[in-house]
Amino acid sequence: MIRSEKPAIALIGPGAIGTTIAAALHEAGRTPAICGRSPHSHLTLRFDGGEVVVPGPVRTDPTEITTPFDLVFVAVKSTQIATAAPWLSALCHAQTVVCVLQNGVEQKDLIAPHVPGSPVLPSVVWFPAQREPDASVWLRATPRLTVPDTPATDVVLAALQGTRCSVDVAADFTSVAWRKLLQNAVAGLMVLAGRRAGMFSRDDITGLALAYLRECLAVARAEGAVLGDEVPQEIVDKFHALPADMGTSILADRQAGQPLEWDIRNGVVQRYGRSHGVPTPISDLVVPLLAAASDGPG
Image (cartoon, rainbow, N blue to C red):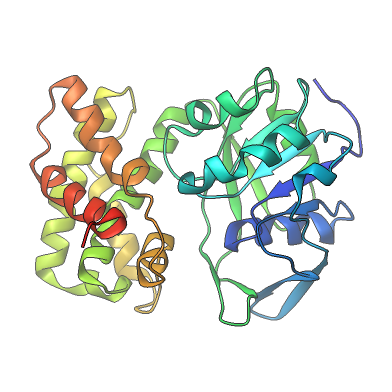
């Protein structure tokens, strides 16, 4: 395992989450190599009280990478893993720690085939950030990650130590990841309504959200998550407390006509429910609608 005090760090995917992590590293004097699809001279993170400008350029050609990195953050969406595969091959060797900043509970399974031998560290991202029309990113809360307790965790802790992004280490990462998945799953209702967080103030949407979350909770427990009966209400309360104009990444993708992460956020509940014999009647309605919104035809 890498133990360098100054590991060479790269980041794939300078979107909202990636820009936030890049800015946190840059502020601490650990500016990463930034890799993506579109060339940019720099990245800009805005937040209440200021901004951070991360120098580029954003690299767009993986064949130009000649030396692998010690730590690679993967901030592309699950729908973009195939296009990120050349970057993973170029940036990683057997000792590279790959920290996945994606939604879902299947991060390791999705990324590991592209980085044989490299330790893959899943994470849970706990902050809202959104891309603005001028390509800057608006950070709307204090950034925080949760990671499992593994040998690879030390490398990520060292990289983000003293930055604006805190890192929690969870002994029971399964439960934390599934709790976040419940939150992501119910946010899928925003896509079907075409509305932001304010929609949850409606009594009928609150009722639907609670029913859906209880269904997701049953599947999470079947997968080994230890989550109490109070979790659905806590998640709905969180949506009630959000600004009415707060969106979510899957809603932004829908509005932009991009493929949706419907499978790893919602389809997974239906799939795992079937494998455990847990009824998922709401998923059986929501998932086909999200899949059609993403993939068509029509």
